[in-house]
Length: 395
Image (tube, rainbow, N blue to C red; front, side, top):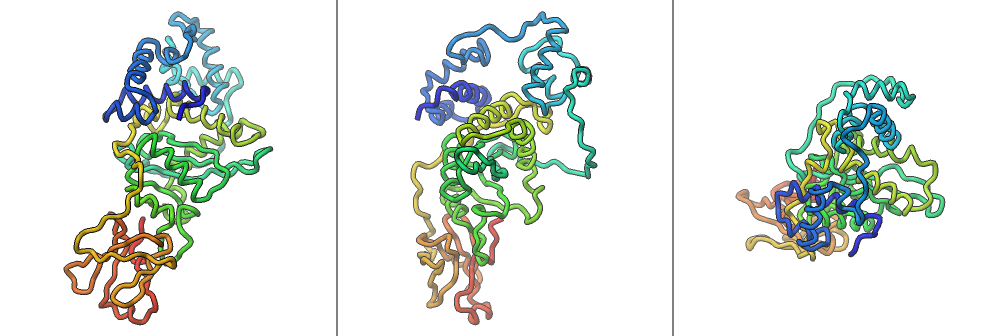
């Protein structure tokens, strides 16, 4: 599908950033962005010759000159600060250097300029406790996903911002203004990210709906089952421990400070989308990140080598497995007795795989072990339909 004109330059810049540090197939990357290889190489040549301005439909004069005076540099600092009121001296300095500005002063000098011009925000006097930074070793090992608190629009009711972040690179994969937080909406947004960036190994969410099902006997939700079918695990953070998703929480704080607090009224979802897309571009490609040693997230991100499957195939099992179809109430029948697997699996096949222990079976859905059954357990005979999934938590 062709891109809207207003997003074309953004997509060009994102494409060339990823293509210049690619590790996989250039042709596959072009296909994900809906362009030919010839077009992709043309964009790369233009970018290498003239930078971001080379991606414009019409060339423009450069904004910065190597022989700017100190007064001009100060005005650049002030202008960049006004565009990004939450940025401090270190981020501003790094961004000016990335833009090719010469004779950029130190971060402390920039902070002094901001103080003199009345542009400093007084920091909150909040004591910080000990902390430890952790990140996965490679892009797409883990994505983090959550909804930001809803926004009230003037024309279209509530807007629910869905955010998806790569754990390793902090690359913002999606910032989508959704009409609700229901399963079909989340699946549609996830599929668009999968088609663009490929499949991660796992996705981390909290314990709310629709991430986790309401079924207390089975921790797998309908979303988790759908993700298993495409080869992605759904993980859940510890209840009442939002720090488990610390990168998402930090991203939400940045979004709040740099976008949401700067807009007094949201008209509709398209109004939200235009602001979200501008912020996502700035965050991924321009904004220096403290946790990345002031690099930008796009410099550490690569699309996944696992593409989105065009069709979802049915689960395949081993020859010795005993395959059962899950009934509408979430049950399977095995050896003349009903066992509860979970309604999230209704209409799909699961497999009981024998082990070296007599009477002990492992329960699989597709490639994932989701439970176990011990026919020698005396408590099983005392229950009408003993649960299987509760024996294994998907986290």
